[in-house]
Length: 372
Image 1: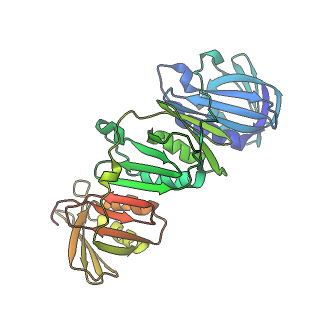
Image 2: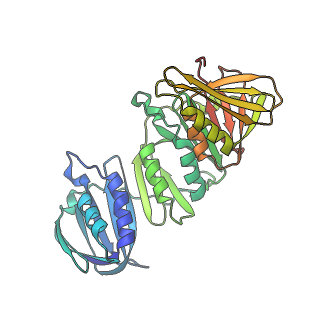
Image 3: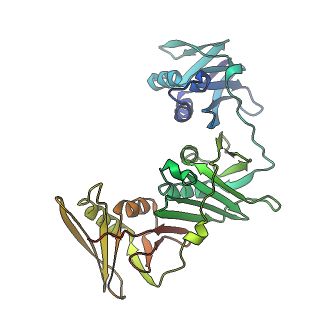
């Protein structure tokens, strides 16, 4: 193999690969990244592949020159370190068997790799069975639900994000049992006759996907098999195992619209919640929202710490009302909201409340039963 390519795109690709490759493993092969130089029909590329056997990716880096096609499998951490320290705009990689020679203008490295035959197979992508999805919508949906994913392994089905494709509807849901984030888009490119999709995707996979979608891609293709999901863009393909479990019936969890509705300006409300949360502790994460005519008071009191009170003017004409929330759960939500206003819908201080920002983004939050 003899190939030259720009350092920047190659470094970016190896960085992504390093987030997949385990630092330690009883299987040495998966601590490596496969580099394959191809002359290509349109343009030369250096394709990277990596996997931890549960998920992985292929990533195509444009090459400035491929003099000789070939494949070499090298330690991911070693390659990342070389590229990090390199200052040249272009990197040359030659290989002879398991040995790679990496050259810059002022340095050269000989790196010992492994037999490409020992590297795990990377699955193929079935274009004919794929569903097309708008990249911008998908990226937004990942960020607006991921914060609600459960970290408790005992609730295994909740440790990922539910992805559904129903006709033109694309839906994503996450919940940890105390809150639920739901978002919907009409950007599915599912063809008539294709089956609906309902799968639970690991958060790690969604994180990698979101990083890949930061480029200039407009459309990605989605392919689902019995135990695996594959997502393909122009420059990359991610594959991942699916989470095996039954995700709760989220439509039954989302309550109907509440009679008590309050519209809040996002920025002032966000700032007020953060201020009041300063006087809570890890053991007592609770703030009270007191609603009265044209006024919202946020309050907390913590023993041996102190108390905080912030007042906000609001457009509210209803009866006096109070409810207690974990401030972290409100902050997580407001961080990802882009609208200037959010609507809070309430029933009583013990029933699930609803935050809405736009017509297709719903956040369900259970209040706390503590007294402040």
